[in-house]
Image 1 (cartoon, rainbow, N blue to C red):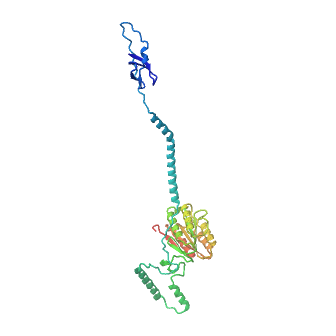
Image 2 (image 1 turned 90 degrees about the vertical axis):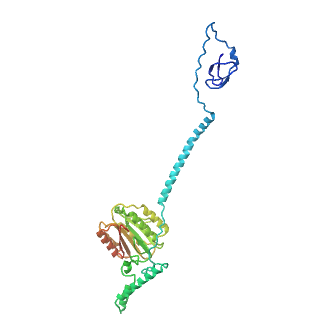
Image 3 (image 1 turned 90 degrees about the horizontal axis):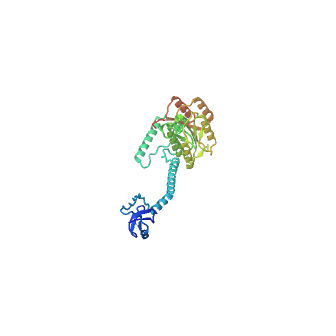
Length: 377
């Protein structure tokens, strides 16, 4: 029989052919229901005799609704709440890692390396013979033989002298050091070049004995391609200095010179060498060439030495002749009239006749040595 009743779950009106108290499935929510027993007493539609009973209305097939378990709904809710926090956490971690990497790169690039330079200088007894080392007796014997042969050759070629004055002259010939700047042995590489008092110093293969050293270096635009090499050689030279020596660094171009703080001579201690290395790393070549303001500062600095020890040396480096060579020569002659300051000149890579002539003249007049640095060195 056809029974009409409402579903207890979804509330839909059902029209199902079933017996009272039987079990049926709701076509809408798919819930299992028990047909109420009371529906059997409900009035039935009256049908005329001989007529067919009215057809039961067709039950529309309700579309199946997606059933989502309650546990899955709860999980999605928790994830919706936590997801923004998780994204924020990973975002901040990523930013922190990037910033940490940048910090490490910057700190590493600014770190000043300790330069361990093999000493290629001679002993403090200027003019002594070269010592090939105790671990190589064969080379030591060969060196002694060569020196003895040279001494005998000098003796045989010397005219015998009787007077005391002649004897003094002869002793000067035998002596390894003495005479002009750097001694007579300077041409043979047996001294560090340049006369003066104090420990040794070296810069681009030329050097001299001095307690107070000022580097006057060209930083004009023409030095752009070779300035890194000059910077490295300056670091090597400064790293060789002993703590008893004082040094200062001055760069010249057009305009006022640039000076290493504190703009004066400082003792060559490890902290001061580190400060100088950091300062050198920041210098960039630019501008025209004008060495006179830098030379004036160099001579002023050497007047204000932190001690009374003698021995003052200027390293003057450039890569070309000056705009007015005679003006530079006259300025140095006035500033160094007493010739107490020795000047070693270095011409870097470009051998122009005017620059060679001027720098040779500066070195000769101020007790120093001239050096041309080849591009291949």
